Length: 73
Image: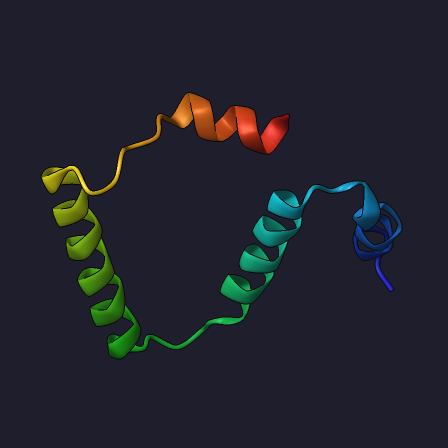
């Protein structure tokens, strides 16, 4: 086991749920070596839906500062 993995495992309980989700996302993303066009299409669909929701006022945007404050506490 590498020192980096050992450190992550030993400190995993100190992470917030958001931080754990980010680590999981990064790990899963690093495994994706092939390009899947259906995934790209799903992201395009989702981003267009979210843009429409923002434009119509159904949802409110959140600033990067607010996101960063929530993640870092």
